[in-house]
Amino acid sequence: MRRKLLITLLTALTVTAVVSPPASAGLPAGFSTQKIDWKPCFNPPPPGLPPGAEKLECGTFQTPMNWAAPGKAITIAVSRLSVGTPKKTVFTNPGGPGGAGRTLPLAFLNRPKLLQNTEIIGIDVRGTGASSNVTCGGYQALGQVDPRDRSRDNLDLLNDTYELQAKFCQRKSGELGPFVTTEQTVRDLDLLRQLLNRDKVSWIGYSGGTWMGAYYATYFPRSVDKFVLDSNAEFTSDWQTVFSAFGPGFERRFRTDYLPWVAKYDNVFHLGTTAEQVRQVYEKTRARLAEQPVTLPDGTVVTPTLLDLVLIQTQYNKLNFTQGTQFLVMLQGNQFTAQASYPDASLGTQYSILCNDTPFHGGREYLNRRFTELGKQYPLVGYYAIAGPCHFWDRPNVHLKRPTGIGVPPVLMVQSVRDPATPLEGAQRAHARFAGSRMLTVNDEGDHGIYGRANPCVNDIVESFVVDGVVPQRDLTCPGVPLPAPGAEQGGNPIGDAEAYARQVGW
Image (tube, rainbow, N blue to C red; front, side, top):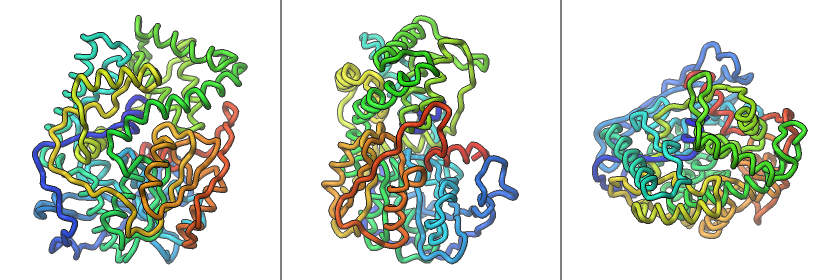
């Protein structure tokens, strides 16, 4: 569970200075003649995958490691899900950034309209999954030091971990690290479009996938068909701004949705009948762990930061509420369970994209001051400088185009009002700055990743846009899905489903 949060939250990597490839860079000779050798991904599908998983095909293609100076090639792994003669091709991305995406098409097996009319493509972007990998050498700074301790000695130690994270990621990833950027990645994607023989492609991207989708549209506007950006990072800004929004975003979800929900079901959890009583249980448990961490039977040491990370992960989706609360209850009653783990390549890819793409301003004193302020206002997440290693990054010479939407066909942005990781305010600013975009706001909702599951209003609007080509004439709203009772959770969302399927098949 701790590693799952890290993969959901982070990004980093680099080694030497790199010149950003020119916007007019053509397709290097030799790469355009490739043929993707599609084969079944699994035969037969492992238990636990949804019906229809046997239709997923896998393949690879080669792309230049550095599009500015094509020469050495790297491998990109992809998947394809199709049930007929598709009219369109839809690229998908689960976010992260750095999330491996080959299992994501399986999350749409329950969307017959999308499935029957499109070829759905999953992609392990450069750096992660079965594509050419980067790594942080197994080192993870997040959670090593309790950021609530703002003493000088602890702040020095905290900044040391960020600096060490940057060094591990950059040195262990070698020559590929500097080239794991959004610009290099979207060029890989457009090469894939050409290899699939498509003039245009559509896009369904979640979270960090909204950033990538907006940049693909910016670099290749003539290749854009229908782009859906779900749970929007503020892609018209920079990564430092995006990650600075975590504190207020998570605190709002925590206090508005989660704590009152736990209190409502005090007969189940016995943690308090009011939101404040539940919050105090969390604070007291956290303080007790600071004095004496708990060791689980599997050897996992539960520290205050691990408790934080579990509860932070819980906020992403209402279907996580019961499991996250049971972890807190477990610490009260010593009912120990094992935690999950996740691949280091995704962590390395996240850091690479975040720290390579856009500059981070400020050093140790800035981090100390800024995250003390945020922590006092938003204690669940505010003390955590999630992208802290980027402040110590040896950043290559990358200059991304700024997404403006000018010359891009209308995109559809889907956004819940209490999304913890990509808050509404940032999405609204991106919407205002990205010409021609339409915003579908999901009211009374806080989940991260909306399309593809339990909200029929959102599903209908998205599929009308992607499949039928109906562009909303104005911004729209949909109602959210009510919070479920404990034990009554059903479904999930495509981001979580893709992660679960990847674990099931050992990807």
